[in-house]
Image (cartoon, rainbow, N blue to C red; front, side, top):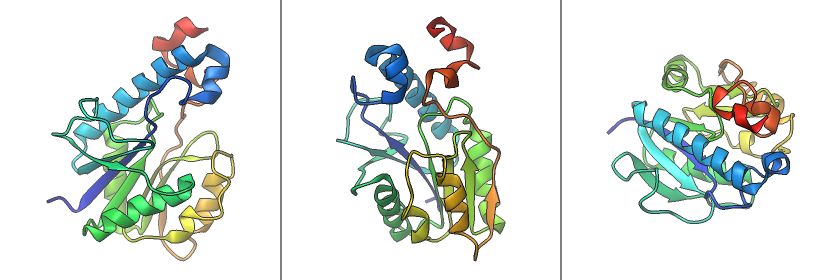
Length: 199
């Protein structure tokens, strides 16, 4: 068994319940279509990564979906806010004796296998690794042991998250990856030809 675990957090793709900020510009049906595309991209990237993969659903575990059982272990997110849910996921996998645990977001078209593999590589010589997003959050967080502070006292969904999370590792070595664009608003889709029809 690999000592590396890869966590993907996903919202169940339901009309009107995902990409709500994007939906204000393009409507619920188009926002759901974009989100499904993002999920498929994330699944394709994750399949190429040399790690044990865990997809954590927001509402309920789905069968026969894009997260194929042959590639992904399926779990349910537990907790009251994003921080608590991430902490519980990391805790669960460290308790299964994984030594390097990374979580990635499911709303990045720029995420690729090399970025994730590089993050695991950086965990060889660092305690933690983080990938900042252009909106002030982060798209990837990896650790070799649980740092609970990274998951508490955060205003999730705001531009302060990356900056404040960095401070939680002041006693540890933290490697910062390249900054990527995650998809929350219509303008975030402008660089991608596939979505030109929305403009």
